[in-house]
Image (tube, rainbow, N blue to C red):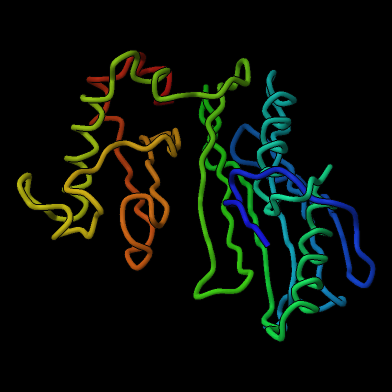
Amino acid sequence: MKLIKAFIILTALLAFAGSTYSQTDTNSTKTKKKTSSTKKVYKSYNDCKKSSGSCTYFTLEYQLVKSGSAKKFINRAIQDTLLKAVNIWDDKKAADFKDAASNFISEYEKSLKESNNGAAWYLETNGKINSNGKNVISYSIGQSMYTGGAHPNTYLAFYNFNKENGNPVTLADIFGANFDTALNKVVDAEFRKMKGLSATDNLQDKAGLFDNKITYTNNFAVEKKGLRFYYNSYDIAAYVYGPTDLFIPWSELNSIMAEPSYYSK
């Protein structure tokens, strides 16, 4: 059975009998001036309970934007991206989250027939508003999946939207053209500061990176106090080192930004 990285895929099929499925819409949660609603999807094998410790299950919890002129556009982008994330099978296409949940359980049932390994599987996905500024909404999608093997596969991805028109916010929007060299210089300096390293320390030897350098990643979050660059396991270092969460305050970035006052509110 082929698996594609969960955050690249879109798809799944129809519901399978013998398992439980539920979708709920919880009360809205408020963050200062903005409001979001939270939705949940849960499906398990043979009605097992997640808390049992040996349950195969699919769970998805996500927030949607409830206000703003571009909320429909942003919510559509969020739901499309979430569907890609929970469709982990490269030979099935799902129309919605219910189909994706059903596919996950049916693939587990297929694996039980094909092997004697009865280890439980799980797919946990969480989408939430990471930061809600004056002009930009930052959204995060985190996922942990286990379908056998030495360890679960996990990742955290960020998506940033212009609240006025719903368009994605890119690093080029923030820093203008030809920003690579200047931004990489700041990223390198802030990473070394976070790790307590000097400007000449070898990053392979001292920080366990694959290379003796670190550059910006397009997996970033626009937050009220700065930019967060997030490197998942295997992005810049081996799994044993875990992910790298690098936060850089606006004060270290203002001098190379195209519109400092727009993104730092």
